[in-house]
Structure formats: C-alpha cells, structure tokens
Length: 388
Ligand code: BEZ
Image 1: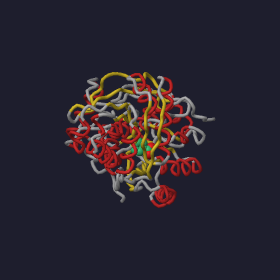
Image 2: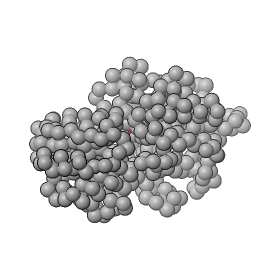
Image 3: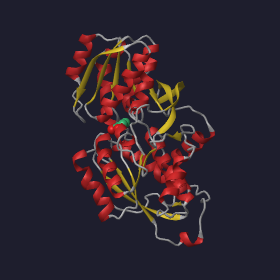
C-alpha cells in the first residue's frame, strides 16, 4: 500500500529545525516503512507506524527541512518474503530511507539489502544481535534494543529473587534464542541456572504440551519470550493451567506490553524487564503520552516509543545536513553522537549503533506495566562483534 502520511496534518505542529530555503524546495524524502501490519505482530507494526507519524506531524511533516512521503509495506513477519519486499520499496517505490522492522528474521534480510545498496536503515524494533554485531554498518541504526538486553536484566532480577532452577520457553528463532541467551547470562551472574529449554516454531501458539512439561519439571520460575498475539495467548494459557499460582512467570517486557487489556487477570502481578514502562512521570514521557493519546485515543506502548525515536534519530541526522542525504558521513556522525531525548529516558548509541539504555523492572498492576525501578543502568550489549 502506498500513500502519503495518513495523519499528515495532525495536531500540534512544532517549529522545524534547520530549514534552508533551497533545500525546502527540494523533492520530498521518501521513507519506506516496512513493518508487519498483519499476523501476530500486526499491533506492534501499527503502533510503530503511528508514533513515527506522530513525530513527523509534530515537525510539520518535515525532517531536515524536507517534506516526507511515507510508503507502507506489510512484511507479514515472513523472512522468506523479506528480500523481495525490501527491493520493492527501493526499486518500485523509490524509497530514500528504510524504517523497519519488528521480526528479527525479517530484519536480517533488510539489513543485508540496506548494506549492499548503502541505504540508510533505522530499525524500530527487531533485536537481532547480528545487525549491530557482525553485520554492522555505518548506515544501519537501531532505536529499540538488542534481544540480549531485556533478557539479561530479567535473569539478574530472577536470580536475585531466589530463582535457582529455571525453565525457558520461546518461539524458535533469533529473537527467542538471543533473549534466552541474555537471560542465562544474567541468571548465572546472580547464582541461578536454566534446567530446561522449551521451544516451538514461530508463530505457533499450541502451548499445551509444553505447559505440561513445565508442570512436570517443577522449576523455581519460567522465563518466556513471546510478543503480540502470541504473548496474549501464552500468558492466558499459563494461568488457565494454574501454573501462575506456584511458578512465577518472568519475561522481557514484550510478554505484557500492549497486551494487558487482552490478558486481564492472567497477567496481574507479573514482573518483566524492558526499556520502557508506565508511570515514568517525566516531562518528556508525559508530553509524548498526552500527544499520542490525544491523537490515537490509545495509550502508547514500547513499540510506539521505538517508532517515535526512529523518527527522532532520523530527524537529528537530517537536520545536521539540512536534508541533504548525499552528505552521508556528516549525517551518520550526527546520529552517532546524539543523546536521544526519548520518552523512555535519554539514551545514547554504542559504537555499533545500538541503544545504551536503562532497563526497568516493571510490575503488572491493572492495565499498566508499572515501573518499579531500574533493573540495570545504562546497559549495552557486551558482545556485538562489530567492526566498523
Ligand atoms: C524480534 O523478532 O526481534 C522481536 C519481535 C517482537 C518483540 C521483540 C523482538
């Protein structure tokens, strides 16, 4: 689907940074938004796109002085279609810049094409470690997290809370594997160990046999990586099996973010770790939440924050070159040294272009992932393996 910004004339346009008269007359910058708009991650893609557009609207639909044209493409969270989808955005839709995506398998193909074509790519969710690791490149940035980060923080908290023997369960793909890897590192540092790893293929949600295995294992706790529709079903099935009464269920915050209305009683009291949460009560977050809620009549989640920050990061780069994408090294340098004033709190980027950020401990209270405190301060992924 191709269109100009859906909400192009939205509320509260703020003054634009660095508009030069010559550049202002230039052609619009075409931004390809490749995200899941169908399937188990559909809500994640929609919220990223919504907040990306909100940030644009707050800047009069201009970045670095140039108007922005958005082209949306539904990647269906399907890695097999990813190379064709990225090429469609670049060749058919003539995208100058790529924003995407949610699924770690899909982002690997995006990053490969971005690298081969030297197209600027900002990743607003997918945490695949490789793209800011061995595959890192000057033109690839992430506004979200590496899969290892929230997992590590949860492992540390679980261990500190006395979990010695833990079972893990996840979809079998890069995000789940790397999230569990982070969890194991954190848990080990806090004196615990994983005694069973359970997996099922993405996006399968037939959890019953695996829940039976968890009950038989009797671990001190369970760590689960699921998101979107799959997270809703897992948390409800876990409670329906009665496991939440005896075995605490932990996870990275994706397990309960944007899902609480649907999870209801099943999620109450759950502890998760993530780089965003409810009740931060900072001026930046309060302004973001008010603007988002006014515009979309919905409360923003972590995916919205990551979409908003992808637009902020791109805006910082484009402002530095007054919209001139050909000045690539200046644009990259400005993004690299930015302190991003995010609703999550200010964050910086590592040398491999991954956020270095606080990871919060959150507790589910009603329909909120209430921030209880900082689980790990200024956490960076320790093993990027990036040579730039
Ligand atoms: C991923 O595939 O990287 C991912 C998807 C949803 C939430 C978090 C990570």
